[in-house]
Length: 409
Ligand SMILES: Cc1cc2nc3c(=O)[nH]c(=O)nc-3n(C[C@H](O)[C@H](O)[C@H](O)COP(=O)(O)OP(=O)(O)OC[C@H]3O[C@@H](n4cnc5c(N)ncnc54)[C@H](O)[C@@H]3O)c2cc1C
Image 1 (cartoon, rainbow, N blue to C red):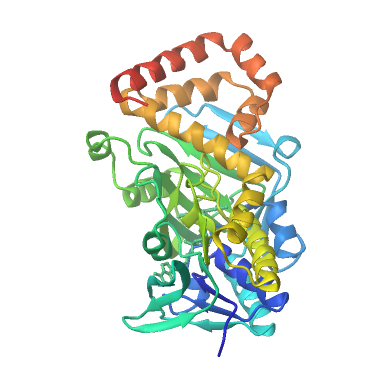
Image 2: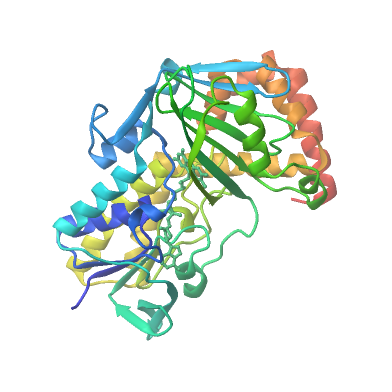
C-alpha cells in the first residue's frame, strides 16, 4: 500500500491530522505505540473552540460537563479569585475517550489505516528528505510526509534533528474519582499551595459524584524539588481535604508530561512536520494542549493536502504550515504564555513563588489575572497592573531581576 502521509501518535494532534487528512483524500497511516487510541491521556478541560474543531455539539455525548465559573484558590490560606463565564468564555469537560474514538472512526471511515503496538524509533531519510519512519526494530513505512505527533518525548523530533527544550516540562498526574458526595458540578477549581510547588492542583467535576482530580508541577531546582511531597501523596492528601471527595474511589489513574516553554524554534523540514506537544503547541501557563493540538492538526492537514496536490514536500513547502501556524492567535498566545512561564520558572529558582501567588490571589482582580494567564493582556491591563498594584509588581519584579542576575538570562 502506498501512503501520502504517515503519522506517529494518536493524541489529539495526530488524530486530528489523520481525521482531516483522510477526509480530504490523503492515503493515511497512523502508528501508535499503545494498544489503542485511548491509551493516551488527552486532558479534558477545553474551551468551546475545541468543540468547534471537533465538530461536536455542547449537548452531545462527547461533552461531559459545562462550567459557569472557574475558581483559583490557595490551599494554604483559602484566598481565592473567581473567573466567571463573562471572562472565561465557555469551558467544557470533554469525554476524552469518546472524542478519541470519534476522531479515529471518522479517519477510518475515510480510509485511514491504524497500526497499534507500533513503536516508532526513527525517521527514514532519502537524499536529505524524511521519507517515512522505522518502527518495532526493523519495520518501515514510507510516505512523502511524516508527522511527529508522538508527544513530549517525540522520536520523530529527535531523529529528524529538531531541538526540544530539555527543561520547563510540566509533569502531571490525574485521577478519575467516582462516588463523590455533593460536589458543585458547575464550578472547576485550580489550587496553588506549598504542597503543590510550581504548578497547581485541579478539580474538574463531571457531575455531583464524578470528579477529575489532578496535579501538574514544573520542577525548578533539585533542592526545592526534594522538599516537596510526591504528586501522588498530594492527591491522596487533598482527596481527604477537598469537600465531597473523601468518600470517592479512584477509578482511573493516568499521567504525562507537557512542554511549557512555548513553540520550539523550528518544527518543519523537508518531508517532515511536528504537531502538538512535540512542537511545543501548548498554552504554557495552564498546560492546556487539547484545543491547541486540535487546531494545529487542522492546519497541518490542510498543508499536507496542498503539498500532495503540488507534489512538493521540500523544506520550503512544508514550512508554509509552520509560517501560517505561527501567525495564528493561538500560536501568539502560546509564545506569550511561554515567555511568562519561563519568567515564573526563573523567578522561582531564587524566590518563593507561592508568596507571589498568594499576593496575586489576594490583590489582583479576575479580569487582569485572566488576561495575563491567557497571554492577551494589552495596554489596559498593563496600565491597571502598574497603577493599582505597583507594590506587588515591584516586589515580584525585583525578585525576578535578582534571579536573572544570579542565573543569567
Ligand atoms: C495530567 C494531565 C492533564 C491534562 N489536562 C489537560 C486539560 O484538562 N486540558 C488540556 O487542554 N490539556 C490538558 N493536558 C495537556 C494535553 O493532554 C496535551 O497537551 C495533549 O494531549 C498533547 O497532545 P499530543 O497529540 O501532542 O500528544 P499526546 O497526547 O501526548 O499523544 C502522543 C501519542 O503518541 C504516542 N507515542 C509516543 N511515542 C510514540 C512512539 N515512539 N511511537 C508511536 N507512538 C508514540 C503516545 O502513546 C500517544 O498516544 C493535560 C496533560 C496532562 C499530563
